[in-house]
Length: 225
Image (cartoon, rainbow, N blue to C red; front, side, top):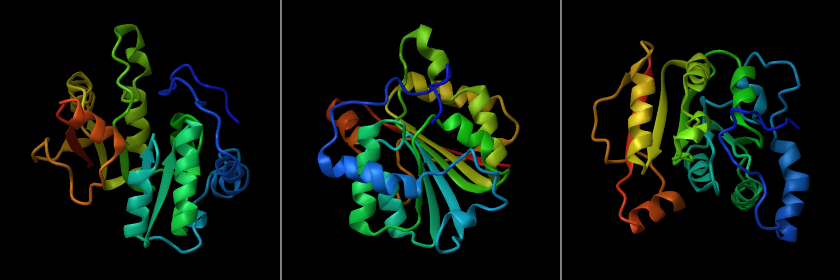
C-alpha cells in the first residue's frame, strides 16, 4: 500500500461500510486483479492479461465502474486498466467484473501518479478521465488531477496517435484542462463538438446527475503526436 500523496486527486478512500459480498470480493478478487507496482516494470502490458490484447486502455477514477466494465464487455480484444482509490467504487466494479465474467480488466486502488510513473513508455492507446473531482476552491486547485506533472506522465505512456479523453460538467475545469493541454506541443485537440460524447460513450451516474441538475457536460479528446 502507498500512503496518500500530497498531490493525490482524491479526498478519501472509505465511505459507507461494504456489504459482506463486496468485502469478500475486495479480499479475494481484487488481489488477483491488482497491478503490483513494486514488481519489475513489465516490457509489455500483454502479460497482465490471459489473452494478449490488441490494445490497452486506462480509466483514471472510474467511480462505480459502469464505463470501464461496459467498455471491457464490448471490446474483449482490448485490455483495460481501471484506477479507483475509493473503496465503494472499487467494490461495485469488482461485482460487475465477476458478474460479467470479464478477463480483460486489471485494477489499481491507489493514487494514479505512481502507476503512471511505473508503466513502460508508449504502452497505452487511450487514457480516460471522466468527471474528476473539480476541487472548486482555489486553495485546492493543486489537487486537481489535470496538472502539468500528470499530463507529462500521461504523454509518456501514450503511444503516438493515442488519446487522452476528458469529460466534465464543470466549465471552469474544462477551461483549466484546455489551458494545460494547450501549453504542450505533443497533444493536438481533435476538432469536434465538445457537447457530444465520443463514439462508444457509456452513460455514467455522474453524467446523469449533471444533466438532472441542469449542467452541460463537455467531452474533449486530445491526440498524442
